[in-house]
Image 1 (tube, rainbow, N blue to C red):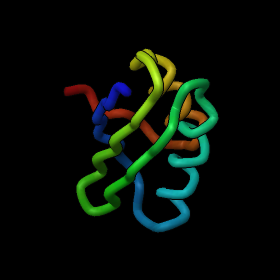
Image 2: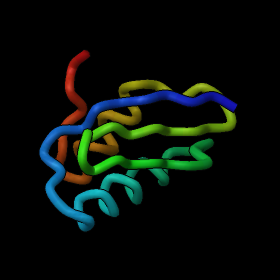
Image 3: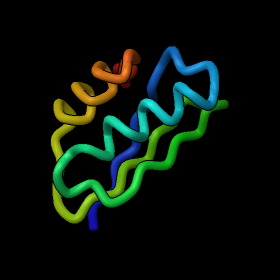
Length: 69
């Protein structure tokens, strides 16, 4: 099981959290998405490796951005 952490900007409410969780959850292999609204941190668990680009595209589809770290 692989786990990756990202920072997502622009989320302001529970609906934002749900949208991000839903879109990231559609990625093949993703088994869990934990979003902390206060910090913008998103922890993604997957059965194998997923690319940062896949996560960034999913976050973009939800209407938000992954912050460059």
